[in-house]
Image 1 (spheres, rainbow over the protein chains, first blue to last red):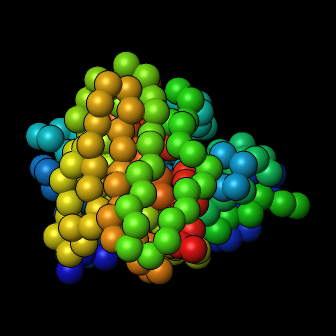
Image 2 (cartoon, rainbow over the protein chains, first blue to last red):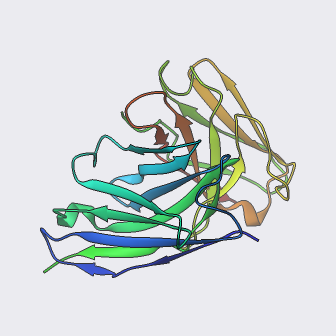
Length: 119
Length: 111
């Protein structure tokens, strides 16, 4: 079965870079029929889509407007995973971060990582 | 893009039917068929219950149904059960800018 396993620190200092990884099992990050997304959720901002990576003969990567200037999503075919980098974080970036596959809606989700931005 | 608008709360008694609305614009809900709905229990990741407006994933109860008319998508839960008490979110896909926009969320209470 398909599983998404997230890893990364739960505490990041202001102005530093948030880094999370989503290891995929049961599917391929290079799948031609799925896309791999990062989504976050906070009480103040609700659910917010951050971006996606997908492969259709070549790689495509899209980012959400609210984070476009600060975010990088990187698929890694050798490890079958997708990573999220969000730089220059502020306390406003405190949220639960999820990776999720989209194929039939967002049909598989990681377990979520609570990331707190604080000194 | 602004979040899609949902009622903050909806309640119903066991066995009743309730409907949750999700209102967007011509650039999101109205224009595309990629509206999905999610159920989220406290402390858990969201779970897809409807995709592509009205399709139900395997294993999801047929008590959940989705539809769309113009700028508004709707989720109906029939035969309300205690286990349906959760938060529900809609999600629309847009062709440019931020690809996916989520709704503001609706807390469903079973009386």
